[in-house]
Amino acid sequence: MDKQDLAERILRIEEENAIHGLVYRYASLCDDRYSPDALAALFLEDASWSAASSDGELDFGTHRGRDAIRNHFAGLPARIGVPTLHAVMAPEISLASDGTSATGRWYTIVLLTMLGASDGSTNVVMLGATYEHDYTKVNGEWLFSRVAAHFHFHLPVGTEVAAKIGKLGSAENIRK
Image 1 (tube, rainbow, N blue to C red):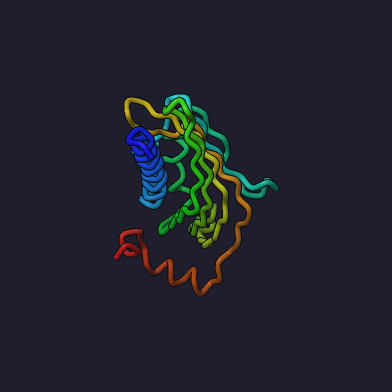
Image 2: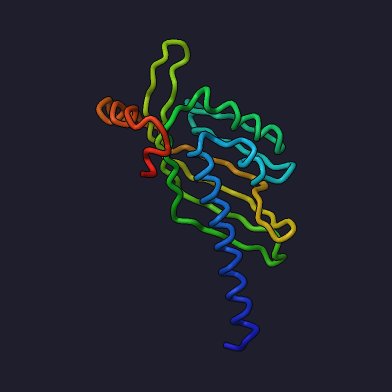
């Protein structure tokens, strides 16, 4: 292996690690009460975000453009309480030869505290999803150009677990 090959391999690893960091940051911000401004900053101006199950039973909609994505995340705390926990894993990253675009696929397990509409009830739900991403590198930084979550399952968590999670009260308590 010559120096050029080694330099290209190192650059590829660095780019993949930067994309991993983008996805981990996204998950962390989701668990921080869906910080809308910080999350929106991870997307291109004309990006799209969607999340739904194939049967349509669970659908968070499709949102196009950074402002629409920001507004979506700003509204989530009315539907989703604390704590939440997004675990992302098994990344498959494919870097394009242009050096400024890539695609990715991740598995995700999410625990969500879904808030009841009018009765104030809460339900803890476990979601299993595959995320498909498109990434674009702008001014040396990787951003999302598309995020599409495909929910494979959404299952209620037992009432004992829900009660214990409810006593935690915040994401900060989970991190301790």
